[in-house]
Image (cartoon, rainbow, N blue to C red; front, top):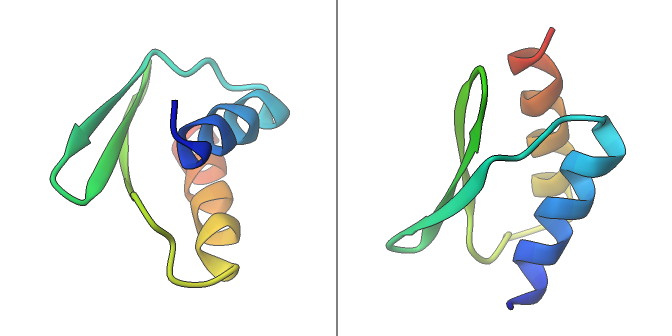
Length: 62
């Protein structure tokens, strides 16, 4: 398992959101939740990418 996938799983767990699955689409991952899905990069370009993904998860489940 790639490190970024583990980080995405830990991020969802820390937010208290159940992650159904992660599918790879080219150079991105689709994170599937009960309320929808988010597209995340397979190699984040900077440290803000994780913060932006965390915010997107919060907005999706708000």
